[in-house]
Amino acid sequence: MNTSSPRAATRAFDTAQFRQALSQFATGVTVITTRLADGTFRGLTASSFNSVSLDPPLVLWSLGNVANSLPIFSGNSHYVINVLGADQAHLAQRFSRRSENPFGDIEYELSRTGQPILKGVSAWFECHNRSRYPEGDHVIFVGEVEECAVHPQASLIFHGGQFGSTQTR
Image 1 (tube, rainbow, N blue to C red):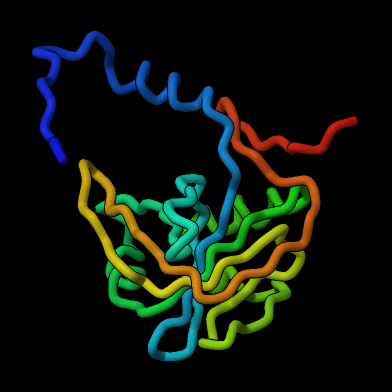
Image 2 (cartoon, rainbow, N blue to C red):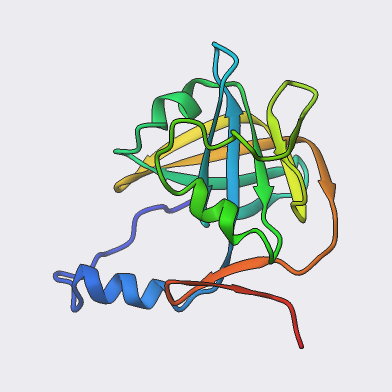
């Protein structure tokens, strides 16, 4: 497989234009959760989630190289990807900021490996941390799904820098 292609000599856009163009792609919103060695939990909001393969069942998400949680998610064997429902923007906002205890008053249950699964999500995927690929200013995480569940409902989306919903009126 050829993985090398000629590149443009210069870019005809700047970072702001690139970011604005990317914001036109509506994405789902997830909170990735894991358990630390001391038994506490860590979670972060991510919209960079996608399916990779049905057999084996693989998904991916990415995390910035400068994220303080990168060593945690790189080193842990498992994590849960929680797909947020339309009424859970407050969780996306909560887990997008640093906080002493973002799990404080949030309802969750534990997966078979002890990872937090947020209550009320539209789907969740418990993943083995299969592989990681550094690319640009992010690390791409590929998770092998070991367990999942679905609770059909309208989903939370992110488009044009704002939260929205797949809910139709």
